Length: 494
Image (cartoon, rainbow, N blue to C red; front, side, top):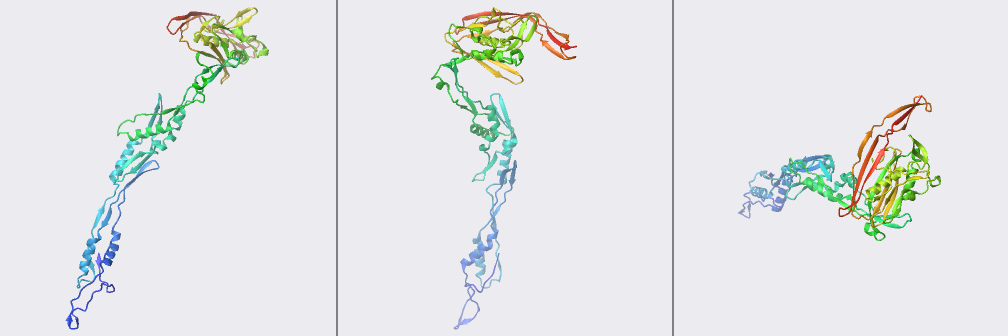
């Protein structure tokens, strides 16, 4: 730094060396304004002082971006002022005095090393996350995880990797939909009269606890160790309450349990009057209450089969062929077979039952139950409620896709501890069916139409054992079925 004299300042040098005043010889002195000197020096040194620049780290466009740190510089004006003042106080000082200035480096608070350590740690954390619930799992990919990463700087210059848990729920939206299960409200069971006779218990639903799962994912990421496989994060769930709980519904009726159920599918076609001959019996029987000791029989429950009640022509086995529309109400055996199997599995006392002439593969082997009326002859299907409490029968109609219909029967009641064991069908005396070609004039030339489907001749037996709560046998029976040989027929136009 260079310093010079200024004759215009109040601190001007009183010169005229050796001049005598009133006969007295005066020694010259230099006078200075110390405050102005200090201000001038500080102003001159100010450009030399530089603040340090901290290193930075941030996520930008999915990548870790860093900037380097820079040292600052500090200048102490006190020694400069003292040196300048000493030099300028000499009367014979040169017109310009050079004063050396020393600067002191100032280190940044956030160093390159701290930023590099944070970048390395971030690379260890960023990676796919597996969320698991039961046997299901979902993978949240690394680019998604990267979008949650951030950094914080402490007062001491340390840099920490952070995971923003508030950004995680968006990535869990699809997981939440797959985990979610709606609550089921209690349902009132009604008899045919409309009276409430029982309640189907409610069940809680399930939903993903997004906040808790997000926090667990964030914690798992921050806990990841180098070169260690990341463990799956367990999804946290919470209950969803039903609108009508079991406790609320029980104020009107007792809770009943499903004792037995069966569903049969069938093609909706003219063979069953497009489902009416199967569904109408289910609608008639729906809500039937069977008292303890009371016997349910098919024909007594269904009543007259007439067009006025919605029945129409359907399939029937006549002699050595199947007539697709040969009987009023034909096809209702799908309904009777379904109810028979529901009652069988409820452990009730079974009554009348007969198998079809040939086996129809939509029915459980050896456990079909045909019903018919021919003149004065009747084939019924029946069972008795041998429990101490009433049972309720529900018949359910379902229209499926692809021309399929479904009929379901459910039997509800108060469980008494009985258990049901059914054997696998034992099949014997099998004769393989074939399919024959018949050339007919009733079809256009070359047109093929299958009028009968093959079914093997066989004898089938199925046994059932029903035990009470103490393991004692209540029912033990064997159902025998003889199915005749039924060859398929494909008619071809001549």
